[in-house]
Image (cartoon, rainbow over all chains, first blue to last red; front, side, top):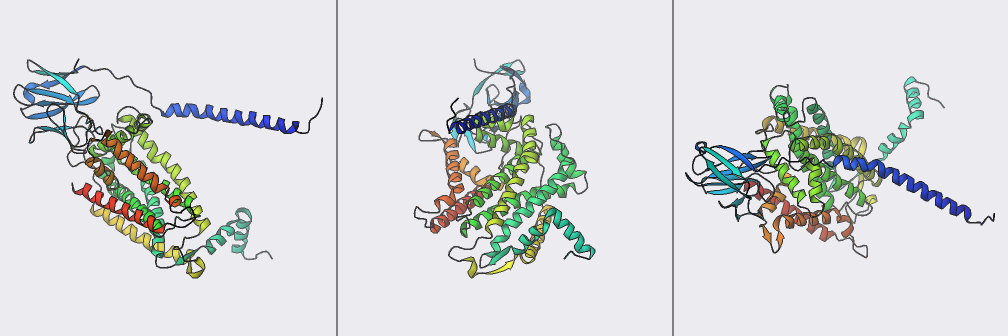
Length: 149
Length: 358
């Protein structure tokens, strides 16, 4: 076999690439599980469409309260004796929980001073979108909130 | 000739095995230039001292703190009401965290105004800025640990800001929260960041930062060569002065912690409205107030995104300061840097005060 002067160098390059590639591949195989591990698994949310929001007599006219809607807060507002409204209580700006302001008859987020009217529309401040409106039904004495279909 | 008395014999024995005299010689030769701005040199040391306080008080708090949604708030209340001097240790940890960030800011601006970031100290600047970022990370992660109402909403807002970054944002927010919402998984994650991950990175970077400072020596004001200045020895002259200042800082810290013990507030309730008057720690107030001012839409951008873009550009420009501070022909743009520093201080001070008042 003819021995070219640079064949040793060629072999060295090939071996270096193989070794380097092997090390890189093994490092990737070590880090891949770590990266996957720190990424939290998706926990399936029980999809809630309707919740019992308590008794009608417990909420006075011109007041609001936060109720659990699945794993998120919802805001139930009793505007008058007969008029009810409900919204997702998650501010569309940066995820804070909003509240009903009795003195101003509006919905307010204390975090960055965003306000919404009683249709969930943005009145002032930084929120980019309206609040998601939910449906309120009063069945006898029970108030039930459900997602719009 | 080998030493004969037992003390020297022991020291020789140690030197042969550890080479400690080399370290002593290095320390012996370390000097500090004396000029009008010498006082600013103390702030790096003050920051380091407060970091030491954080490590000690943090380890002490770990003896009682329990990182779970069910127990975190009660364990901090237990520390503050039942454990002897628990209120003091926790207050010192909280106050020291705030003073540490203040000292780090003063240290950073002193570096800017004395132009100490100049070649060849670019990497010292970059490691310093990375350390400031880590300190803010400590502040953000530690804030949630008592699991009270204010920290809960601060974390919701903070992680939601991360979520609004285009492309990588949602994945980043999920990584931070350990899920879709701020909850039990977020608390354990923030605990891991606060007591393990951030400290490990910080120790490495502090080591590198100090090594670079040691390697380059203290920076002198531009236009003055070190040989023109008088110097004092670091050990013991400068170090003893620094220790006197540390004692002063400790006195301030003890006074603040004793007179204004850190409040615990109310336990976090994911199904309660954000309380009125909610605001973040003072070092995030300027950004907080800016976000409050930006309208929901500016042209076709969402206001929040525009704010984040602004903060991102400002931060990137600040990190790169030593690189744009030098012109194409190698001239130093001292005035431009000073103007940028003054602008940043004015912005931060004005918006922090407005954020506090409104």
